[in-house]
Image (cartoon, rainbow over the protein chains, first blue to last red):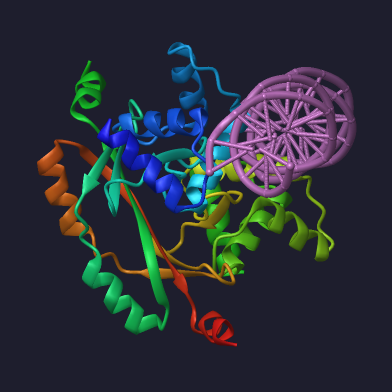
Length: 145
Length: 145
DNA sequence: CTACATGCAAACCGTTTGCACCCTA
DNA sequence: TAGGGTGCAAACGGTTTGCATGTAG
């Protein structure tokens, strides 16, 4: 409950109307421990008997990304876009190339590197994305069989 | 000349036939100092009076990616796929959010981090992607005006 | 009551595919 | 000359958009 009102505050602060759809979509993002697709949001809401049109989901996500409440990711080179609620601050991702599982990693090894690069290139740095790829223990085991 | 025959060797080694199209596409990738799209390859070849069907370009790029001769990138969250010839080994990218210019960065600050993460997560790491975003000097100046 | 949100269906557009023909090895 | 490579046109699929209707503030 507290959580919800917190998201409502975020919406208000951003000048967005608080609607049933938006709350449901944000809830879904918050509940998920890893980035998800627009379609996953659509399907899971549908399972919970909440039917929101896919285009509404895309539009909502777009607005939330604009307002910096949500981050948009293209982790796998091909795949569809993933979305994640921005409640954890800066983070990185570890992706299993076998089962496609995505693990969120807190902590950043790049702060000083970014600064040194800033000096070196005269860029005004505004951020970075780091994706690490590998095979999780389960998939390593499967590969032996 | 030497360069070309070198790429021909790479093709042969990978068990691929050496065709006019493939040579032209690889040439275009090699000449470019930064990752480019399939369409850019198509258009630039066309300017040089070499017309190769777009689907051939996509198919060629796909094969080259399979053979690890080319890397496929999704740097901007939305944008189309970029391709780059793998003649420089491991590298990272610095992207200007203003003019979309992409600068390739040699050297990697993440080798030891990757190893420590490997121990910590029991993942068998196979690589990573690092994209840094910011504004280049030119774009910073433009923003003042 | 008004401006923003939503549903629906159609468009969009980068990429992929099926098939007939071509050309390298 | 066989099997991979290419051109062409059509399909695909994730995402966006136009428009009429609904609803939060």
